[in-house]
Amino acid sequence: MDANRVLEALEAGEFDGVSHTYQPYDGYGNQTHQVAMRVSGDTIEVAKTTSGKFFDGKENTRYSETSTDRLTGMDAVGFIAQRPYYFSQVRPDLF
Image 1 (tube, rainbow, N blue to C red):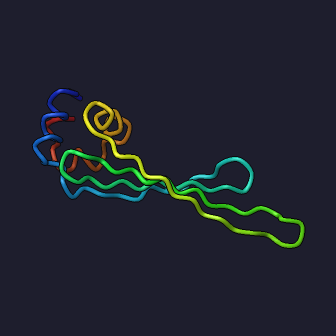
Image 2: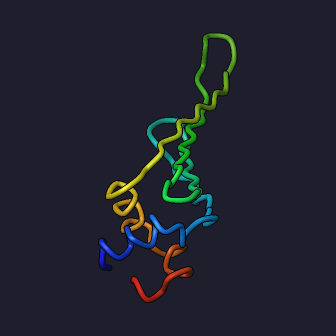
């Protein structure tokens, strides 16, 4: 993968509209993590949702927390390098 060419394609908006929700995976204890990404222009928005439950002394209490990161530049290219499948569908010549 040529990182500079991927960065140029990202900044040109060629990956705009690519989105995917990745398979959830188990964390420590009773937690489950899910990652969803969406590309908008030259920015990749990565939403990480952690959900689980804990016992508060009387009953199980469920919770869900979502944090969103916005990746641009070489940070976004690093994300693409870790998960290239959906990006290579748009520009297979870069991968």
